[in-house]
Length: 322
Image (cartoon, rainbow, N blue to C red; front, side):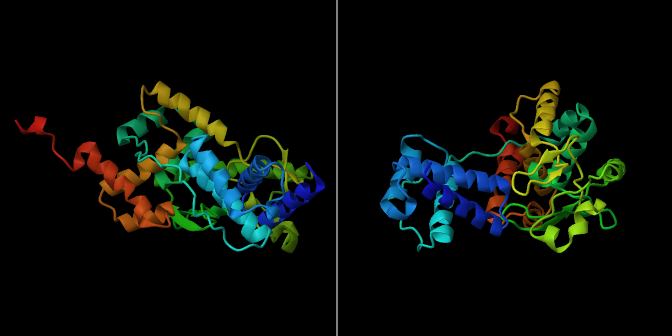
């Protein structure tokens, strides 16, 4: 890779970090920009045209048959590159062929199936999955939770920098309160041992680490579900306890689904889908569910009303009329 392109990628990373985008977003955007450059024979993007961008995105849809979400991510990366890094006007993609987004309903577990799955889990994976279902959290939102994000007095959970970099408040299930108190105690003891060894600092969002250097050692900023080992942050170089890996929870859930004899392809996100569907089935207002999920548009939440209707609650089978 030439120095010119390396400098470009450094600029991309700098602009992403300046806007406080997640590290996963940074990795994804850089990968797409590198693929775009290679697709065009390593020509610098500033020398390429709208037609080059369109050709690359059409190649993804037509030749590689990628999902609509994948093409959209590549598009977002290139829009960011040209608008925020190269400071060019918005792209004119007149000939863009959009990858088709299949109309699929999300996998939803019944209340009985949720109970059966949770009965085959224990420890931290159980508590995390109870929060995914009981509070409608994404797995990333749950694992990024800090001690201070759980408000026991108001029985609510603060979701910081969720999808779209938005904050929101969701419910704290009463059945999780005692377990979370116990988890806070475990984290407190672990943090005290780390501090005694001269460690215990954690990553702080945005520029808080520079503004309040001592805050990184405070218990309230520690992850609710810290890793058992220390790791080095790829951005700051800080060696700290990150949160546990999503794969750890996903593997435990997969085993529980199989042990429960459930044939559905259920994932951690299925618990969030189940949370929304069951709330609507219980008669809660769709706007309330939208707020709890953090959906920008109510049309996204409407998908769960279709699940309820298709599940037999809206239509009576003719087989049952005689």
